[in-house]
Structures are given as structure tokens and as C-alpha cells.
Image: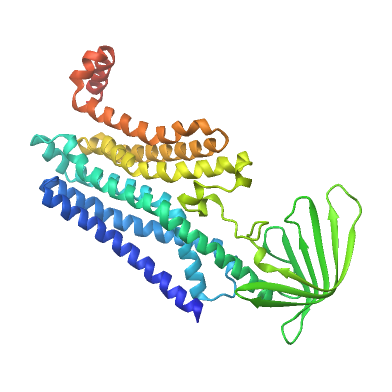
Length: 420
């Protein structure tokens, strides 16, 4: 069966993608090892955070897959397990753009906390190593994760979502022909309601009612004695016989009634624009499609706002893994004893990373209404990274900041003395 073969292919591609990502990280580690960019300790830390990332990412991916599968259950009723696997897998890349950076943040915080609890950070600091030495493996892996997110946003996500939309349209067509139950109202898509009185032995629909409210200016109601679902060239059509069309315009109390002997309704119109071509939301489009919107979309400020926000979201979201690497190092990269509450700093680091990502999402939503807010979209990750670097530098060279802010440094020394 085609569904079976597609399911196996998607499942194989998913396993191949995970395997490729692990191999890519390993190749990066080998490459930097040959270039002597990272010393022995840095390579050791790189392996630690990579192992943590793989485990955490696998756990979060399983949770996201379960949540995604629950959303797709209504679309794949009666389609079989392989159709279920295929559609849920195609829906994953959209969520992975958020999951992968957070998995990286958790992995960084976990590995740094473990190094601190095992006193490895204290030993390295006592031997003369600075915090910049700890940043190298996290920055390298952060760049790899950023490139992975960018590739997913520009290539994998639009390809998977476009294919997912095609299957949703196909499943909704099959839903009408096979899954509609007698005496019950069903809504396979927003604004469309179907009802049948009974089903004939040959599978035809008896006593058919179709309510189409997708157009905000009118409501169309189709009543037919019999209906038959026909597939032609990969498209689904509902052939209705002996019925009426009731058309009611908004603001008009009158109803126009048209009688027909036969009427064909294109079921493939689900998810399609008025032009007959499949309409893809901004998130489902490739970058080239976003940069070349249609003339009708150019005339709609709200649509252009969503397209503009989608373009900048795809690029700005790839900056957060590097920000998360610096947040983790700023929070736990400085050697501390266990009594100074490293677990509390771990929670602080995660909350700061979560707050930065929420601020970024808020900036994207604000950009939809205000095009000049593009600086805020990139200002959150880039500004956060600069602040983390200044904070790390502040803790490494307090004498420099003492010359700049003498009053602040005096107060800081008093707080440290009271804490000790």
C-alpha cells in the first residue's frame, strides 16, 4: 500500500536525521580536535554536554511527539497506523525549532552543574584556567545547534508542513467518503458541516446535508437525496443528485434557492485559495516564497506583517542556542562550592533563558503589527549574549569595573563579605 510505503519512508528519514545529527556533532568534534582549537579538557566538556544533549533531546522529542499525535488523531481516524506515524512525523519539525534550543540549554546547565558538583571546575580554576576556557566547547556546540535550527527553519520545516497539508486534505476527503456516521454532524474542516441520514449498500450517502460557512459574506446549504464521493486524478469530488442549494447573504433576511438534478462539489477545495491553488500559510512556505508574495497579499497589511515576522523569526530563532550557551556559562561557569547554592543558580539560568525566549516570541508577535520593531527581534538574542559576556568579564576582571563603577564594586564586596 502507498500509505505503508510512505510511513516506512518517513520513519526511516526520521531515524536517518537523528543519526546524521549525531554524526555531524562527532565530525565537528574530530575537526576541532585536529585543529587543536579545543584542548583536552575542552574536548572532555564537549563530550559531556553532547551526551547530555542527545539524552535530553530524545526525551523532549518523545514528549512533543505524543502531544503532536494527540492533535492529529481527529485527522487520521480510520487511516491506519502508518498514516498516523507519517502525519505526526511531518508535524514534528515545527516544534523542534523550539525544543532543540531548550534541550541545549538544559544540557549546558546540567553538564556545568555536574562539573561543579564533582569539583572539576574548582580544580581547573585553581590550576589557572579562566572561564573563557569553559566557553569554547559550549560555543562550538552552540554554533552546531544554531546551524541545525537554521537548516530546519529554511528547508525541513516548510517541506514537511506542505506535505502535511496535502495529507490533511486527502484524509478529510476520505473522512467524508468512509467515516461519516448516519445521524451525526461532522466537521472535517472549519466552516464545513456534513450530515447524512443513512448510507446505501454501495456506499453512497443518502439524505445528505452540507453547510458551507467558510465565506464570511454568505452561507451555503446543500440538500440532496443522494451523494457519491468520486476520486479523479488524485482529487476528490462529491456528486450530489436531486437537491437544492440554499444561499443566504449576511445582512439579508431572504434566502435564494436553486434546484439541481446533479451538482459536483470539489472536496479538494479544503485548504485551498479562491484561485484553486493550495494556499500555504507563511510558516509552510520556503524562504523564496516568503520573499515573493502574491500581488493580492501585498495589498493586505496583516498578511504582509505575518510574512515579514515569519522571515525574521526563522533567522532570529537560530541565534538563541548561542545565547543559551552564554547564559549557562554565566550562571554556572564560575567555580563555586556546593554550599553556595549551585542548584539555585541552575534554576535561575533556566528561568533567564526561558524569559529571553518568551521575550523573543513577544517581539515576533509585535513585529506583525509594527514592521519597525525588527530591531527588537534580533536585539533580544544579540543583546542578551552581549550582557552575558559583560557579566562574565565583570566576574573575571572586577578591578577594571572598579575603576568604572567604584561605588557599585564597593557594595558588591560588602555583599560578598556578608555572604561569606
